[in-house]
Image (cartoon, rainbow, N blue to C red; front, side):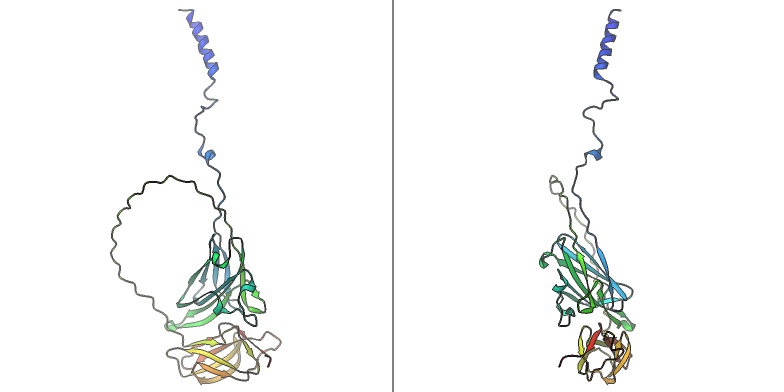
Length: 326
């Protein structure tokens, strides 16, 4: 029996040397950390927006536009600042500025912009969704956006006042620097393909409790219409010097019988066109003359004032007075 003890000790020692030490070599079936097993995937890019200010011709900011796209659509979100609210919005899109329809003197033709809306009641936000394929566009393309708005502020009794016109400011249009456009490069995307997952058998949807019927909400009250709204010249027109022009405006409910019409330059009084005339919505402006320094830009607006209430409205955009060929 004593002879077997050294033999067993030698066998155990050889066995331990052959198997190695367990705290140095990991078993073959040990699970590696989860991070080292994560499969490599394509990089996905989230949509990123770009913002531009909406400013008047005198540089006052009345809102912003936010532009963002995905693989199929372009979204333009318009927002006002302060007390301003949108009365009208216009948007045109093209591959270049030459694709924006303009008039004889280079002025953009707002009523031919493909996206335009009249907001009644006035809105503080407005979103325009553009299908890229309908306009022959795709991610990676450079596009030109011309965005024009008319904003106003609510006054007493909800009557709109301080109507102003504004553009998304970028570069000025050739030959018509009162209007502007912005250039945007459509974002591209690299989307990872998700792994296929086994389909689970459909489950019966849980029964939803019936909600009590809510009484219909009262529609928001619309502000009263303005007493005076200038129609012509309302901006971007070319008025011939030493000639005549038919001034036109809308007459609101409750307006008085007479109005005063003034010519403004840079927003300040420049010339009295007529001190008092019947509030019929039309006036023939004869023998048109410029005022102010003739060497500077001949850019004007008109103001029509209701003599009974003192309410007034200005042209939304400046217009030009210049000699015309006869």
